[in-house]
Image (tube, rainbow, N blue to C red; front, side, top):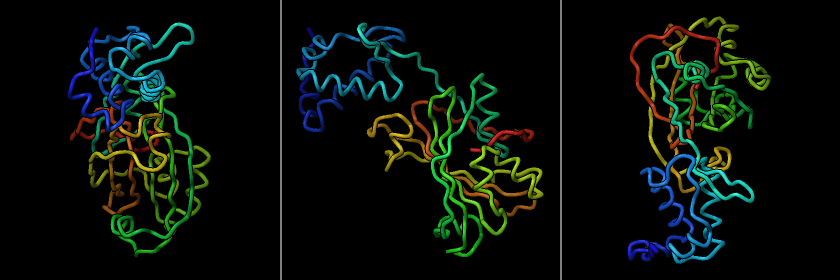
Length: 257
């Protein structure tokens, strides 16, 4: 029987269920619990970690929400097959193309669409006056029906009137740009950093609030170098791997992230 170590005992004040979740996650990551393997029973985990049934169930629920395990009624909990998405970032980066090339099925879901006054960072990125009207379009992105992104995209209302309506109808950014006389566009700048999810991000990504997310802030420009869009995309960190690719890619019909 494996008892809880002194280190884990000390950390129990941080939260017993987080401690159990973290150790099980380590077992999965290290291969000690292989894909498809059945997790120990609740009783076995209670004895191993010295915690109660509710604590074990909370830890399993968080792992299930993160896509690490699946719970089968009457059979137990099993380690899910982990398949990290390799996402290429280049001067022409398109969400749909990236996923389709890996045999994934991309899809999106609108969350919120508002016309707001441009905050300082948005105004600076789009080279417009602070307070100018912009569309803020919040969407969820999926790969094979698994949520992987929450994006907040901003576009100047003056240049793209009624853009939010067409996005709500499922029309891709690339198609809308073309309708406004922009047949092609490039990524001008990309910033990537990590943080913990805030607000509704963890729920929308179906992950734990304690799991870090990857944040990608970017500016797109037309072929004349004029900014046309600014976005902040929050990615489920454990489901994605970024690869920076400097080779040119042809534009496609898909949406952009």
